[in-house]
Length: 190
Image 1 (tube, helix red, strand yellow):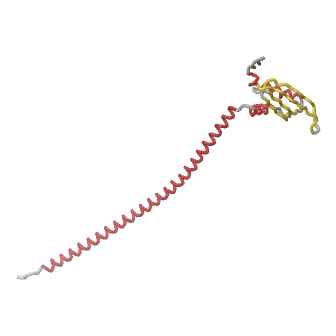
Image 2 (tube, one colour; image 1 turned 180 degrees about the vertical axis):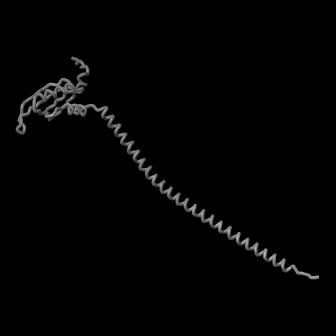
Image 3 (tube, one colour; image 1 turned 120 degrees about the vertical axis):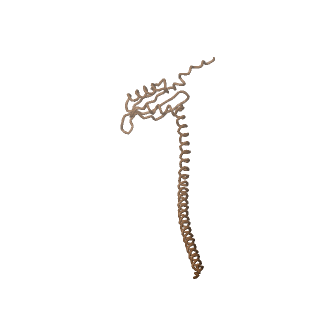
């Protein structure tokens, strides 16, 4: 009988199987390393992109903080201006005294009539000026009498003068304040 020694064939097959298994293991290890390396690179790119987005957002936040600071400054300026305008409005609303009376006189003064003096003493007022005609003086007197501030307008002096080669009328008026004139007179005790 012939004996065949199969041991070397089995050993060769075992060797061949071991080599195949080592090759498959190495190939699998390389594939896993490549996949892990690719994932690592992708994650690094994502992290870098996120850092760039964060730095861009921080820059934008700083710009917006500057704008907000400017807006706050503008809001405070707006509030200050509003307060000042409110004060001015209140002053205009409550304005009395010579400023209001002078504004009234300024509004009713006709063209070609110029005021040279305004004197206020208590409730008595004297106004002096120059006009081209007596009609302008009369118009001025009627306008003052019609105003809410003055009463008892009287012409004290009206005389003709020559100024710069032109004949003009110089005048002086007297009047009283309406608010003082409307108050009842207090009797004087003897």
